[in-house]
Length: 217
View: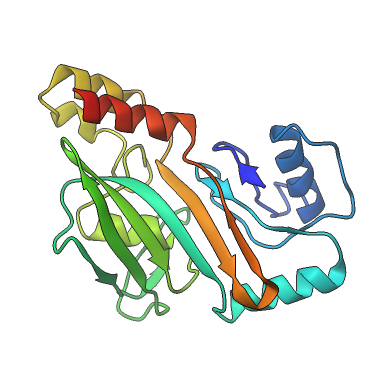
């Protein structure tokens, strides 16, 4: 499924079961309810893009194991503040829960290993369009790694990327970036070779609108 930003796939006791998360996703995508579908993995509520659902228990088990054992490749796009240097590389700081704010993760020496590869797609006014491939699957991994290196995602209020548009000098660019209402992070592609699976989702309208405003002005 191509998950719209704003749809919660949380399965906590407060948010509801995995079945309810699937129901919310199908409803947001304009699809009919289907109790046979099972959620394989999740995206943050503000993240858009590819979410994998399985049609039966066997498929769910195979897909879940492939993701858990790092036999799947996920590719993301993100619009981030500043200019990552070098233009491509790997962030590999370990991550752990922020003891001062349970909603957040942070880089910490005794945290769990994490690695995120990145590649610059295009440099724009004040921001950079990146392609990212997480090699591990820690909570908020991409968002934390980028923020820790001074390049939070545009619109990411939790990790410092929501208000930096105020420092942009060009009025048209400032207006375009101020309109962003969520972290511009998009799950673009998911590949699972052993299942002959390769699916992708196009950039959503808000991401494309931000790019267009920054490129054309």
